[in-house]
Image (cartoon, rainbow, N blue to C red):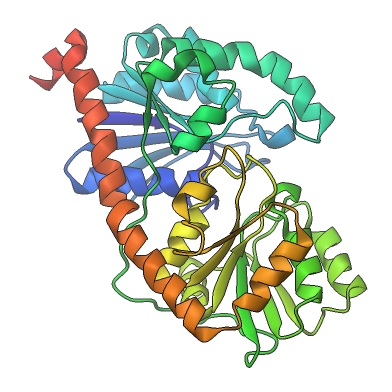
Length: 387
């Protein structure tokens, strides 16, 4: 099949959506399909670029800015038209949220194709930033038009689907397909060194944003003297978190190491005792880092976020510990429980089995392929092209 993905960013830009887009593209190429991804350059890169990475054709549209996490790319619609003419795709796969996907609504060639919408997260009307709430009033009509036009909608968990107001009118189109990640033959690379390697080695990975709850983790760590933390990622909360580390007297037990290379990140998982995902709200739609930890055989503490997939990835007291979001006391108690090596080993083993049984890339991608094939067979133009 010929598949065109519309995404926000692509590797080496990091993030759960970006990682899943890359994994999907590379899996489909490995199965003999032709895959192209139209994404954005990072903000400030005014020149578009075309490349082929691991046999995936990638077009990075110039991006002049990214206010409120939304890339602005005047050339995106031009690249969309060009790629549809050149690739002649059988399926258009749109990864939302991403305002640039709205250009497909105004492209006659795009409208002639079956659309798969991959619903990675809502744009919540309850976000603390008033600018996002205001912008969503403009965004929402286009979002709903995309969903109305979609032939199929992929949602990453039943909990997220049930709680999503945006998807409320379109549940008959929705299919739940959890994210998945591929196996790794071996973990290479040099892991960062924990400030106190003889203490409980905690790992947290993600964008340094408010909703990730890393400030709550630092407060809980201040109450857990036998633990230390490596925090991997960058973002707008970096300065505040560093100041909090100093204020809490945690400088000798916390390392904020920024972004790492893929081998270094994998080595960090392999060396950690516990992964902590302390996110606060449904902006954490699924938590791909949970799968990365499960694959590596690392015990997990995660927030049990109502309406998010985190509580469906982790089975409390079996494949990890779930705590109430934002509850410093509950998180500190869970950290102290993880000082028990037997508990960590039990949770890690169960988590690894759960990943292998339900959250592999092959399982996720095959479910997506089944949707593609169904839409192609139901779409006369696509079916004729396939012949």
